Image (cartoon, rainbow, N blue to C red):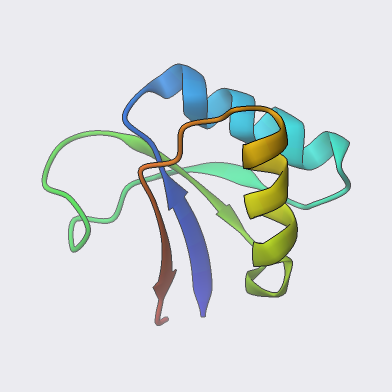
Length: 73
């Protein structure tokens, strides 16, 4: 299972990745899967077991996350 955070802007995705890495979470930029959105965009994947931590990082840094998703496969 893969966990993704999606964003409305590229800058929020990049800020999220940087903040997560500084917090010790292995996060990386990825394309948004077609099953989530037909539009072109960036997401950030992270270990599902770190979800509570990445949500806290997003709140702390005032990062606007469009949604958190768990993707099979």
